[in-house]
Each structure stands twice: as structure tokens, then as C-alpha cells.
Length: 536
Image (cartoon, rainbow, N blue to C red):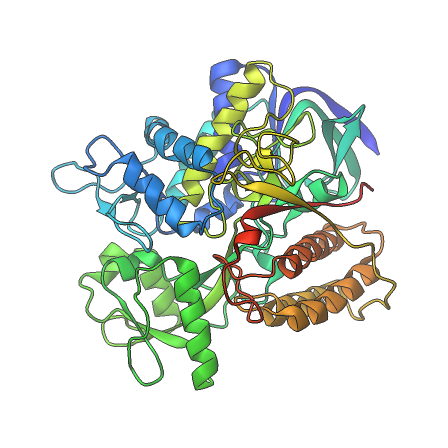
């Protein structure tokens, strides 16, 4: 093992909106030595794939933060932490202004006013966007440029494998360098912003790098994880051989595109939250024996100028939105849970912080409201930086962390009828099963196909159990990983195990979690299921 990179005050894992927001703020406002470690290069994060935009109530917007809060709570199906959502909607406009200050350019009309779009679950148009449907790309561009100007150390093509824990606190990470050699990177504080785990599924809008690395490292270190069963499927991914699946943004439905079944009939209100629309599409596909349905955007004017990214994807698929109905099907899109944090981004392990899709802040609850994802990273990553600068060194019973810490709505308790308590859920021990066969890529495909069949939009006890057998076999065959591809598969198996355990334990249907054998919402499950993996 090569020598450690000592002396960092803050090490950020990941280079998406959350990670780079933290790095830029820490460098510009507080100085010190800040490092960014990413397994790709800075500009390849999932953020750049985000099309829709950022939901925020800005000064020129007639909307109110209370309406944004109400829409978020409604989408979250009773599991949002209202304090966390209040932080999101009140801090959000300031963080969008910060983005503009470092050079992010959002779309404006001829009079210079920000153009606002409406998406599913939003009561009003409040989505700011860039390049029509290239918001993530513009945000990532601005943050990458700012990071190169400010960060002390940028470690690209470094794959973080495990957290370094000494004396009960996180003091760095173990990683594989670009040449594959192990290296230890130490820091006073580590912020995990490694994104989601869309690669758990065979059909996803996420890039191949989205393998749940941060959540898996946390599970191996015994860090609390919650809401992991709520995997959001985007209703309208283009049914196309390409992977990740091209995304047909909710903005299309916000502008009037209609969903049609095999008979050409509408069957759902297109502006309902994503979980509702995904379930409706999946049920109608099963009913009609189809593997996709259609999005009718023929009534939308000036498509190629308003939605250039989607227009390019459709040209590549030989589709013309002016005349063709567009084939669509749900695809794994967003992980609503993850490492539990308080309102300042502290996890249950002192020295370890988290932000963005890899977390459970309590903002999303059982189902994320459209365009709150970029906003969550923009808001909570800077809060973590400010807490670190203020000398905070561990979690407090605020936000989702109340479901972990005893008292104040901690595990197994709640302060009042509106508080969300927590229920501890231990991961089962490793099953004694024969390993799955084939190469690493073939085993990854086995896991993804099993998760899609048995733990996707629709689930039941039998499907979850059958999927668990496949995941256990894949995990057994992976053994002790040495190369990044093997580590990614191990991470996917770890996160899959947590998803399956929580999905099996939540015997109800709520938000993005639908149990065919428990189709109703049950008040007994008005709580977070908190998963901890055994420390390894």
C-alpha cells in the first residue's frame, strides 16, 4: 500500500452536485485543505444526466415556499421529515443564487426573466432549467470549473473501497489508485456524496458508475441507513436498447404530452407523482402484455428547441416527436434513502458526513418530488461544511437522524402523533449458498435482472425471497474483491441486500414501494426502517 495523503481537513467522495458544492464552499469560505476523490473524472457524475431542472421559489416567482413544502410532503407519502423539507425549500433559493454567482446560466425569456417549468407533483411552475433539458450538464460544468479553481487536491480515477475508522470515528478512506494499487487517503472529516444505485436494475436511467458505493461502505462500517426500500422509477424512460436508458423528462408531461396504452387510450393523470404514474404504466403493461407503452408529444410545439437533449436521443432512435408516439417504460431512477443524516449532514459515525442521493435526510420520504434531487445536494452539502467549520463532530437528533438516536423520535419511539419514529432492522447474515457462475459482468447482469423482476416497481413476499437467493449467490461468488469491477459488484450486492431486507419488512404499499400482497398503506409502518450492516 502506498503512503497516506495526510493533512486534508475535508475529503469529499464524489463529484456530482452535492460533492462539488461542498468542496467549493469549503475552499472558498473556510480555506484549509480540501480534497475531492472520484472514481471517474470530475465531469462524469450522475448530475450531468439530470434534465428537468431545480425546484426553487425565487424572488421573481409568485410561488411560496409553503406551497413547495406542501407538494414535497404530499409526494413523500407521510414519511418526509417536515423540518428537513422546510430547510430545503427555504435554503434552496439562496443555493441556486450561489450557482448563478459561480457562472451557471439558467434559461431566461426575452425580457431576462427566468423561465419556469412545471413537473409532476408540483402545484405550480417553479422549475428553473438550463439549455431546455440540459440543466444537470450546466450545473456540473459550473461546479467543475469552480472546483478546479479552489480545491487543494483532486484525485480522479481513484476508487474508494472502504472507510477508515479509528477510535470510533472516520479518519479517511482506503482506495484503489489509477494503477490499481491500494492507497489510504486520510482527513479530519469525510463527506460521502457518491450518488445513487440505479445499476441495481437491468433498466435504469443511471450511468454505469451508479453502484451504491457510499451506501455500501457505510453498511460495512455499521453506519445507519434508512428508507432504502424506496427506489423511485422514472415513468417515462425511452424504450430503447441503449443503456442507460434515455430519459424523457417530466417536463414533457408538464407541457402537455399524454400517456397512451396499446389501444391509444389515456389511463392516468400524467401530472401525478412519479410513483403513481410508474405503477399505472406497469399495471397497464402487465394487463395488455406489453413491455412498453407510449408518450404522445405530437401536440408540443418547437420540440427540438425546447428540449434539445431529448430531441437528439429521439433522432438517434429514428423517432420524430412531431409525428411518432414515443415508446416508454419505467426505469430505475433515484434512491430515496441511504446514509441517515441530521439536518447538518452528520451520519451516525463521527467524522463521516453525507449529502445528495447517497443520503436519507428525510426530505424525500417514500417518494421524491420531481426536481428536488439537485436541490437537496445544493442545500445539504453546504450545511455540512458550515457545521464542520463550526466545530460540530457528530450527529444530533434532528431531521431523519431522530429515527436513529434514542429519544426525540429515536428508534422505536416518537414524540407525538406527527413524528416519524424508527424501527431497527438488522441485515441477515451471509447465506450459505453456492456462488453464481460466470464472469463479473455476467454476475452483475444476473443480479440486475433478478432485482428488476422481483424488487422493481411491483413486489411481493415471494418475489423478494427469490431475488434474495440470487443476490446471495452473487455475493458468495464475488469473494474478496481486488479490482474496481469486483468492488462495484460487491457494493451492488450489499445495497441489494439492504433494499430486499427493508422491502420485505415493510408489509404495506407506500410511495415508491408497492407490495402486491400488502396493497394498502398501514399506519403501523409510519416509521423509518433503519438498517445497519455488521462491521467488517
